[in-house]
Image (cartoon, rainbow, N blue to C red):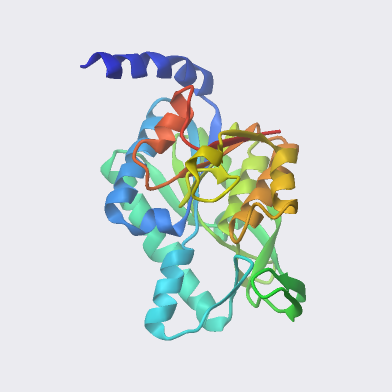
Length: 295
């Protein structure tokens, strides 16, 4: 083994010792999971974290695949401020894509790497108790116009029931959860995967929430590498939203992160899911690869 690789192992050791037995919640975006080779590479990294004794819970969305299927089926989609309006047809497709194809693909890749994973949706074991989001006045940042919006079958998390998750994690299983939830009447809702991951991280009092995104961190000016922020506090994150630096789908992500850090999660990380070894570098090296946000 070459000297640089041995040095990397040496650098990783204290982190492995520090995080053994700790809980990480890892959120995978649809863009991260759509490419099979990319998914296999990420799963190798997840399997390694699991192998060294880190307790993992994976949450995934699938917005990209849902949009692709909707286009294929000719079902028009409306997305306002990064949030999807979910009509009857879109909800049916979300069930197929989230709890079906994507979840199974992740499980199969983990199986290949010898990890004992269990596929769930937020409906299993009543993990995600949700309620329908009521219609409300929404300011559309793209059009600059406020209007009354009914998001349809979109839910908000009322409570996370972690009983099933703890049983699985305590017995060395790796839960993989898709972003659906239900209410007491059994009505199913499409729920933002970042929100579910954040709420699960709080409920499990996770050491880290790691968001594998299509960006490699937070930038003061998008696309300008020199303006990337490697470490932030929750207050600094909210200032980015308030000052209009954060845009589009990044805004709800950042608002969720700031909230969960105030509720007990020790750190949150935004890293690029398509960058090989980004997850391992973020966890096991001093430098990291993305943006780390602390309370």
